[in-house]
Amino acid sequence: MAYYIKVTKKVADKIGAPVENRNKTADGNILLWQADLNVIPGETIFDRAAFVGGVAMCGNDARGEIDGTAEPAEVTIPEYYQDASGDDIPDTIPAVEENGEKETDSVVTDKTE
Image 1 (tube, rainbow, N blue to C red):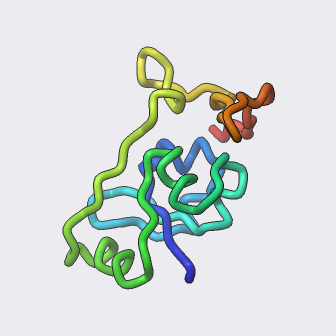
Image 2 (cartoon, rainbow, N blue to C red; image 1 turned 90 degrees about the horizontal axis):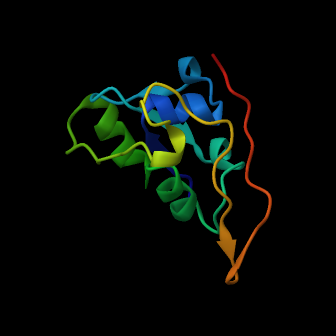
């Protein structure tokens, strides 16, 4: 089953998803495609969505978010997507533990501004 991932615009910008090509929800957030999270650590789409402070949802729920007929799902901006002032986002996100061991390389994405 295909899922849409609701995230804040700041998170979508950091991931590098072209927000002008994505649907916006009634509350001003962005609906990403599953493939947009391929660079995000996690075993499942739900793990990846949670890592970026988002929520994975099916097509009907996404349509309700766009139309404003559904109760909006809450999304956040994780700390590692903003600096202390909240005005900028770091170039790297922290490494993730897999199988009890911390990976040494963190995910690096292009900064789009």
